[in-house]
Amino acid sequence: ASLLGRANALLPREAPERIELLPKLAAVVAYRGEVAGGQDLFAEAHILAVELGDARLAARATLAADFALLWTDAAVPPERILCDIEDARPVLEQAGDYEGLALAEALRFHALDRAGSSGVVAQFPAVLTYARRANAHYLEHHVMDWICITLPRGTLPVDDAIARATDIRDASTSTHVRASAIGALGLLRAMKGEFDEARAYVEEARVTLHELGLRQAVAAHSIAVAEGETMAG
Image (cartoon, rainbow, N blue to C red; front, side, top):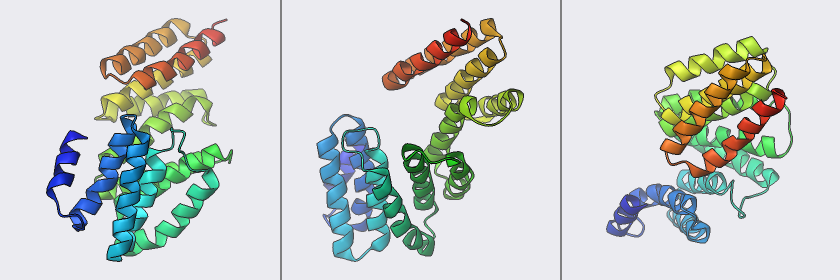
């Protein structure tokens, strides 16, 4: 937030580079807990993009706002998010904005999930394809994290899910993603009745998340602890 804020202060008000970074600044401000401040920055980014007649930047500002506010009281209803995605996709496709398309498909996953739709994990391959074309590692890591979250609740047989989680753990360059994979392995091992191994995996994931300073993720991880112990009786 500090670095992006300094860049924002240095650039002219209507500079395209400033409008490009405003949604990123808005997102980190919102993630820091200043939701209203983030909303103001998202709104400014959208207004400036419209003033400049840049449909791509306007679409990116809308999608970035929808994404950043998902876990706040200012979250947009799923139906509205899906409409925003459909409006943005043709613009992003025409511009060859693969990072924007990855963001759109990641957002579609969350909107469909919140709407209670089935088959939401079908969005994952599209996100990964676009994110890798754009070299957008944060979106690639985001979807890999969610693959790990959904594996214990998905339709893959347990042994296949264990193999998938193990591959993700071993291949990822993100410590957060590796922790998610290890947490998934804990639940999947518990499903096989291997409770000593399950507890070890779950605890390893908790320690790693704590070391990363991800307080919300540590709190959410207590659900996995409880699920493992429930399976253990």
